[in-house]
Length: 307
Image (cartoon, rainbow, N blue to C red; front, side):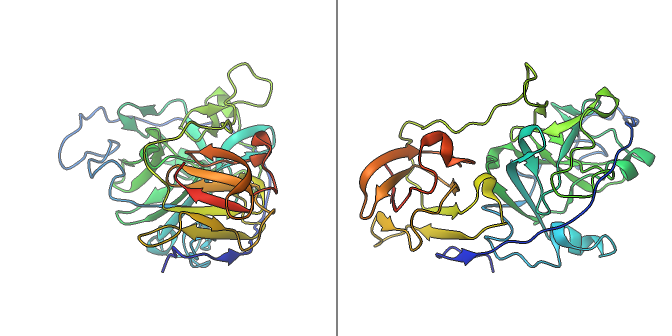
């Protein structure tokens, strides 16, 4: 089961490195219909029938022999049990989407987002494996809005996850977590931003920039938050979760204060530097990948659900 109570979690790691070149594919030109034609967006609700959950695979206690962590030889139904996507940092790309293994997620300029369309098939698909899902796949999100997630039907009838409408891929030339060997290949493959855009290396004029500014109070109070010891929602450190429901105190102290570097939240949350919601405070409405920008890194001792 995927928890909603306070928890403490440690990390997991993975491996590899390499290179290679771009490849294209063919489009079928078939207009959208019901049921969806190959290569077209799937109309099954905003998320294409996926089960979207806040946090990471580790913070949700996902089985470590399934999903992103399943061996390549595992049956597809095992490998599509869950997908974990988080906004992170890989090389000079920041923020860029990483999966549950810490591998960089890419997008292809020859695809389209409106409507969603994947054109990487055949040999191209072998070099750039699509992030495949099935209806009901659990998708864990940290630093990525649920509204950005969707599904597209590929030419072979399988389903591929999309971010901001753009089909998502990994790269066979990336072997280690944080590798970015697919960046810029053929001038058409780029790391994917948390909104589905292309991410260019730091210093490039069109590079996506992290969003860590304090936010104004929203209209919906948070009901759950996961606080990570490490920045970028990393599972390499521990995490702790808090939830708020009927009868709960909106102000809650952290069991492990002064260790949080990033967090996910499903609504408005007020962070405090002292116990019992005292001291300095800041309001956030969205996930924060690095609390350093707010001056709250390793400084949170309590939170208030809502402003």
